[in-house]
Image (cartoon, rainbow, N blue to C red):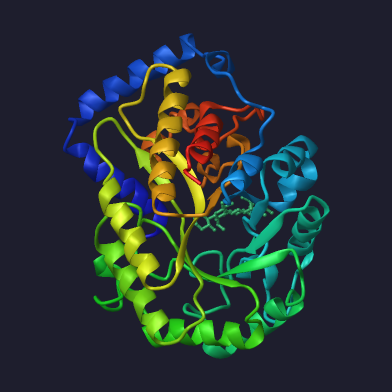
Length: 384
Ligand code: G3I
């Protein structure tokens, strides 16, 4: 099961226990009708503090706010580029370092997207995270999964070596989503690794990385660990194993593609406990890909929806900050470029409700939404 199926299946399964399908259908249809007659300019409903940037609010309490960026969006949309530069002090590459982009054919490297991103960041005083050196998705067909250690060494030497002395690029996602999507997809039941991946392999990948450049932050990144459950336990076991093996592992990236609903809760205590346990292993948890989806039942208006998204942000960030998380990165800044609105990734159950997919701080017209205010407020509420 891939991550899209995981989301849609998991969410779909949860929903079945609350609704009969006919009930759901009529509720969605009602929402659609109401939506078309009640589009609201959300900016009338809140006073945005446009004078304080998210990065400034974060900085004030010794924290960092960042966003994922794609070099294409930054090049083509100058207003968006300007917005990113004014709001964020960190960027992460949405695609530029993925194997399929940077080494599409064996030994043929395409550094242009990464270099363009680095140039944008250094010109605008942003620090950059490189995402991601190894991932089972976004890999070229010629590459095995997991890639052989000799391919890893060759690939890392080229890429990490090239940016070793770069002052803008400070952090690497060494490996992404190495935990299986479900127990039945796992190689083992201690670490829950994807088929073919052994814990020693993950350790060796980190060792290779450290042998090339140990001056940057090394991160292991994954999704679906923001509540409680199987995946969270496995991830924790793996982090403990890596730390006990002496791997240079500095931070754990929690993607945080969050879903909130009126019909089910979020286990905040379980999540906070997870953060505590991660910290006790000597790693820093960081939020790497935050966005918020409102699950059914959908509200009647976009204004209500935006408020629910904002409430989700606030709830999640308050929990993160209560446990000392310093870095918050959203997976994009504007709904205009959210992966969740891309036809390939639109959540199946919301396929007819694209208008309700408003997961980021700015809307598709680059106007701030309540989610932006919620992030600002969460930073301001941090006790320094
Ligand atoms: O660049 C090509 C373009 O030339 C082509 O015409 C077009 C046709 O659809 O595709 C373009 O590539 C797309 C690429 O994004 C750049 O826009 C790919 O199809 C598309 O699959 C790719 O999606 C990215 C996805 O990862 C897979 O790499 C999303 O933008 C990106 O947001 C998403 O990010 C992942 C994180 O890396 C890991 N965590 C989950 C997150 C969301 O899936």
